[in-house]
Length: 310
Image (cartoon, rainbow, N blue to C red):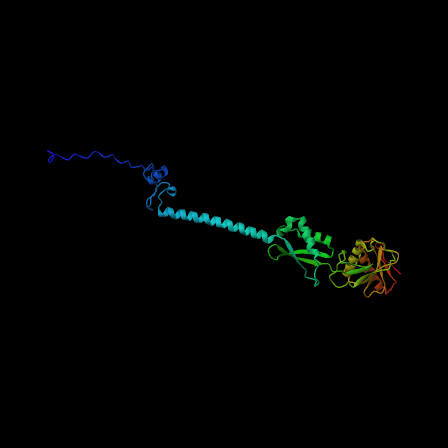
């Protein structure tokens, strides 16, 4: 009977298909990183030592402290190297000479600008010497003296800021001067002739009585002559006498007549004989004439080891 019969199940419904989600291998590795083909190494306990603790996946606090100390040492070394490189670069820059600041201690007159150009020309020819620790100061002084004979020496006196070097110029003191055809020339005690004088006019003046006619381009006052005059004045001072005047006698330019302070007669010198020998002969001759109470018209020292007087 239909009333007592069991209810028949509904027809099987078609199972709904659920779309399958595909998972990438990378997600699988992340998901099962502790399950698939992995062996955990290390220990989180400081009391349990494990093999190869430093490279283990699980590290104890002690190993973490060691790792941090190693990183600090690495950072400290890197910082030290950076600071060392910066200090070296600063030291190189502080020793580099891009420009010069010139001054002099013995004169009050302002220096002209030609000396800076001369020094810069030297550095352009010798660029490695722009570093002060490589500067050959003697070579620099010689170069400056060649271009500007009135300079006695050049010294480097340190830095005047980054890229600028202080340099002190020492100028020559003239012992004698000569004015010829509007050109003033001077000579110092070493016999070096120059034209630029930063000091007072020298007391010893050269008087030209030679009567020699000077043509264009001819120099009567040769460097050899002026060198002899300068060394003569210095050597006479070394003998205890003071030169007052130097005269070029008429008809010659190879000898001079020297007048000394307190001596009424002139003394003849030859520029072809060494200065030292002649001044020694002069000193002996003056001592002899003073002892003999002789007052001659002149003394002639032009012949070696002889002194003539009249």
